[in-house]
Amino acid sequence: MKKIGVEGSLTNVQQALREKGYDVVELKQVSDAQNCDCCVVTGADSNVMGIQDTSTKGSVIDANGLSAEEVCQQVESRLQ
Image (cartoon, rainbow, N blue to C red; front, side, top):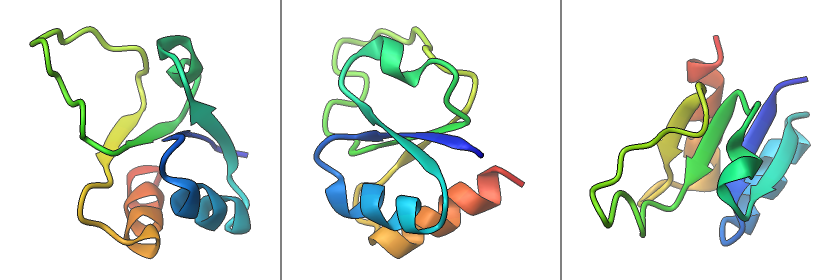
């Protein structure tokens, strides 16, 4: 089962991904992203300080402006 990290404020995305059978982990701290196949973020605090450290080797999807279904489609396409 693919493990997807999702920011806490994106509850609709979390639910939609769970319904599609993904193992969803809420991203509360940097270490939560480790071992995730993909992460979904709001983009609200994207690179605020110019720091570019990575915590995951998986894809990162910015959910800003996307519906839950569109995010699910992005996740599926990146995991193929």
